[in-house]
Image (cartoon, rainbow, N blue to C red; front, side):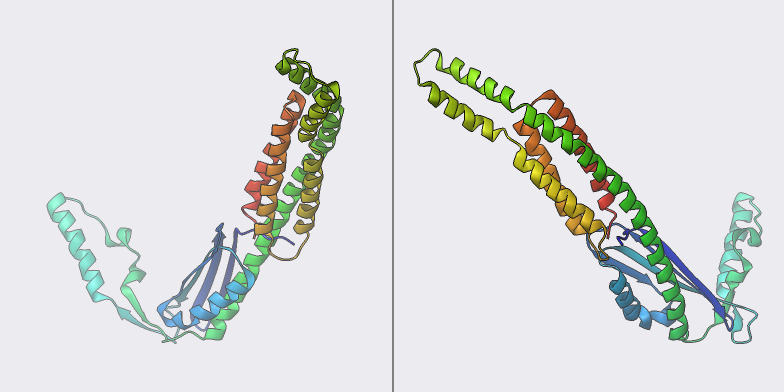
Length: 288
C-alpha cells in the first residue's frame, strides 16, 4: 500500500491532574526532516520520538508537538501568583488610560489564568508520554495510508488513459510508414535535382531515413514503463523516488515519439500523453 507524505495525527489523554496532547503533521520533502517540540520537562524523550518517526517515515518534513496542561485544582500542583507579570500589565493599562484616555479592563486583554504559575512536576512519566505519542503516530499513519489510496486511484485512472492513447498511436504510426517512405523518397529526388543515380541507392537511403522515424521501440519501452509503474503502486514499501524516475523515462519516450513523427494526429496524441504524465507527476510528489 502506498502512503502519502502529507498527513496529520493527534493523541490526547488526561491523568492525575495533567492533560497531554500530541500533534503530528507532515509536508512534502525530498528528504526526511523531523522537528520535535517538547516541554522542558520531557526533552529527554526527543531521541526516542525521532527514532520512532524514522521507523515509519523515510521522507517528508514532519513536525511533532507535545504539550501539557496542568489542572490548577489538582492536589498534585501548588499555585503561585505571578506578581511581576500582573504588575507589568496593570502598568501598561494605567499608562494607556492616563496618556491616551483609553480605559481597558485587564480581563479583556489577558486570561487571568496566565497570572497563575504552577509548581509542576519535574518530569512527566515517559511511558505516559509515549503512549499518547504512539496513538498520535498511529492516527498519522492511518491518514497517510488513506491519502495514499486516493492518490493510487487517481494515478491508476491516468495510467489507463495513457494506455488507451498508446494503442491507437502505435496503429497510426504503423499506418503512416508507407506515406513517410514516400515523402522521404520524393525529398531525396528533389535534392538530387535530376542528378543521375541508381534507384536502388535512393531506395536504400529512403529506407534508412524511414527506419529512423519508426517509433516501435519507444512504444515498447513505454508499455514496459507503464507495467512497472502499475506494479510499484501495489508494493508495500516507499516507492515515490522510483515512480518519479519512471515518469522521467516515460516523458522521454513520449518526447522522442513526437520528434520522430510530426503527423498532426500523432502530435495531438503526444500532447495528451504529456499532459497525463504531468498530472501523474504532481501526484507522485506526494507519495512516500
